[in-house]
Amino acid sequence: MIFSKEKTILAYTVEKCTKCEKLNKRDFVMGDVLFTNSSKCSFCSEVTIIEKIFGQVLE
Image 1: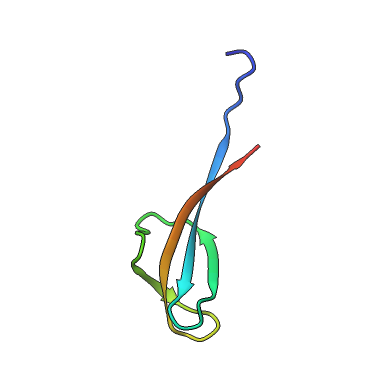
Image 2: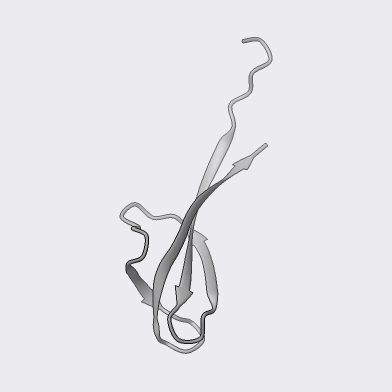
């Protein structure tokens, strides 16, 4: 197609703390799996769980 333009999609992972329920959005890393333990919360040092993985289109 003459006017088609490839779009870039950036993948993100959202982690949620099990204690204080703070959300943290970070770049997606291969191996991220929904509802698994991820890292420590930067606010209270409790374990976070991966709650959402999504993509955003750059235009």
